[in-house]
Figure 1 (cartoon, helix red, strand yellow):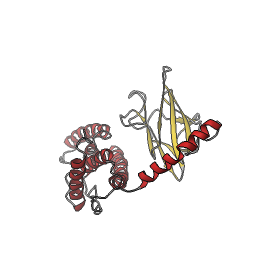
Figure 2 (figure 1 turned 90 degrees about the horizontal axis):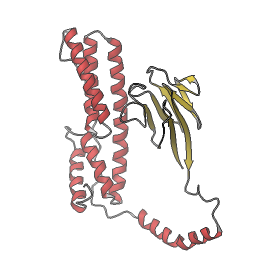
Figure 3 (figure 1 turned 90 degrees about the vertical axis):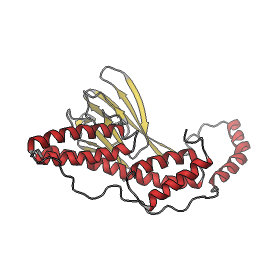
Figure 4 (figure 1 turned 135 degrees about the horizontal axis):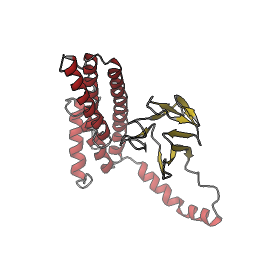
Length: 287
């Protein structure tokens, strides 16, 4: 069974849009990566986070102003149900949670429809069996992956409070830009995290503790997302290689190589070797 969240957005001016997602984490805000994107003057970069927890969608506010509401009540953290309505700066987001199964369209078939299904049944079964049969495997099992983020204490390159504040502000702007680009360039996520952490150290040096804490939270949330994406892509890549889905495999390899850029480990060597094999047998798949 697959669960899809459908967002029906009505902007302040009346314009309507609809988008959907089946991800475990969804974002409403003004950032380019957001599932529901609002104007920058009406929403924070990330205004509302929706996460799948124990088979329930939990909506939580990031604390940005103006406060988001859920069904007319100021949102802090709440279970999201179908037909719930989120509102941010007058923008109305109606939520519908849809669940589908393979036989969801079974009702309402005519007799002729079922006869067609029966006639095609043998072909479908044979095709399914073929698709489930692993292709010959040209690849070794991957070694354990490296740690993406070394445990290190970031330090500000300036010790004077005024200079540290200026550096922190510059690094924060660089990190914000990198985070916006990260959905399209995976290596930018690592850059954003490193700059957030160094910026936080500079804000601490400048005795701006609240801003430092906020930057560390941004770095922590982004790190969690990157680690989760890294894990899911590794698992998916093994299956794609097994069934020789080279086009998708190359895309995942490119992201994994970007995330491990600058590190040296048996896993990165395996990735490089695997990329060469896939590209050599499917030269057009990366175009």
